[in-house]
Image (tube, rainbow, N blue to C red):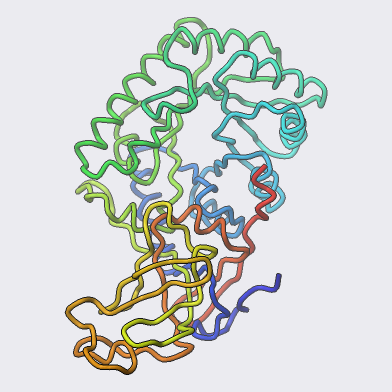
Length: 383
């Protein structure tokens, strides 16, 4: 599919609906978080699942990220093809065909993957042996998410022994200790307490591994909602924020931590007014352009709100105090700007990750002009 814009185009001429990225806000977010981490001696491994866009990942690495993490082998292949040289698959991989691809990829980049079961380690070792590959391994801990990950020290030690038995094809790099559920706890106190518990468990397991003679150089985890706590813990060596560069309504709903830099809304979905009715207007982007798993989007238009979202439409209406009492163009009430057919409106997504996944291109702009247009990895790369 052809891109919706070209460098140099005016933003109001971009074909809609389109995923747009404000580069001034993006660069400010990246500089702020990377600077915060660097001041505390912690590395940033930017999470590519937030955008699945190699152009964005390359920009994050150029700004100081050590590399990226992603969730799938296909994503890792796509980022490697674009020139990202240090990749962590921050997830479990167990299918034999995927393990073969992973082993082949390890010949091209510095690669690591997470494990939480001895059988998965053995399967990975067999794949690496077949392809003469070497892969780093992180033992994933369940630090409160109740998803993947071992529960504690004994399971971690069993997996470490299995990694050692795998021979030179596998190297234990350290621990994956990501608490996804803590990212959207609204209060700083709640997020801080969750990461204090996660840090304590990671420190305990790391000490046990080292006491048993296993290397454990890295503790990786943290996200946009909690990175100040991992960075200050003295336990984590790298953090894995993704949404920080883009932002969304759900993260903006978190109560700010005074110790963390403020992040700006950089990502949006550009739409056009396609219908103007009595009391509402309709935009040309709906569920196929913006995710609603974390609630409806917000329209970046004073005096208006989103009333509903369907497959190809978002209906917006004036706020109650400004709704016009007579027929005519919506927005003709006092204090609410009128809308015209074809007028561009930006939607701020509730959740940036699945919104980016709906698009083939990212239109990066500065001011009113398009600066770059980057492809998003094909959705088939999610395997």
